[in-house]
Image (spheres, rainbow, N blue to C red):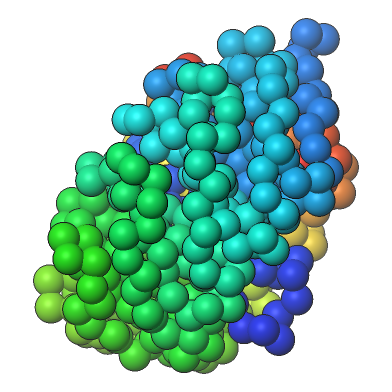
Length: 407
């Protein structure tokens, strides 16, 4: 999935949570182009109770197991993807904020924000095998499965803890910019990108040496990062300056800065067409950037407060969840026009696409359900009740299941 978020202290916790979720989703989509599927809304489709205020969810596709970090109850719920039941509840540190899975080692890493440590969970036994001290305020965690290395951004300490997955020990601590929040890994180049909200730059870490090789000045308050793995180009959305910094991954230099709408909060990339879509939350539109020229070719009006973007690369269709108009805008990627607007539940905040089945899933925060859209007809075929406050989706690509975190 892809790379994204760093947050000013002036932004409240709910917005910070939103950005972390968006970043997680973008990373997931960028690395996985194949399928997700959610079970149809039938009587046997359960709503799974977990802990209090679930913040983040991650999937081990090899074992079909889902992990949910519960911020207020200080634990992780383990869900069996075959039966959709909670098989274990694991006590971790204080205020678990984000969770990541290394599918190669079947190890789960949980960032505990207020206890400043990482809980390493053995997925075979569902027990905490290590509690790893890191810097103050770990907010985001990313795994490089190729090197079995874990990267943790410590928001209050202005650094990144590098953990050796073989020993579950911190091998080094890398000083970065101010208020690092988002971390993303490009496994093709073994490069780690850290968005530093407070210092308005991106730190590039060489995964071979775990040293900062470059600090790249970007716009004001960078909050989201997306990587086009095909072109080795990085797109950084800056909510304070309303633009996107385009970084050449080969030279580690900003090649251009693209002016977009107001409060760019999310970025999506279609690697098949080299098209970049930026969701502008406060101007209620989508900026389309041609990745070949890095210029804006169109600005597309959508609903109020577009919060999440998903791309179906097979059909070249873009889906935008509009939080305050309770609908989804469907954009034809060939013409960059809205072809239809689909009414869903109240406060749609997250959207995901299964390109294999051409099915779209939208979590609606206000009505606590998931709207399932048929991409061929652009109609809602099912509405599935889930837990309270669904805000994010995680995918098991092996079993074509979609899992929803309920805040």
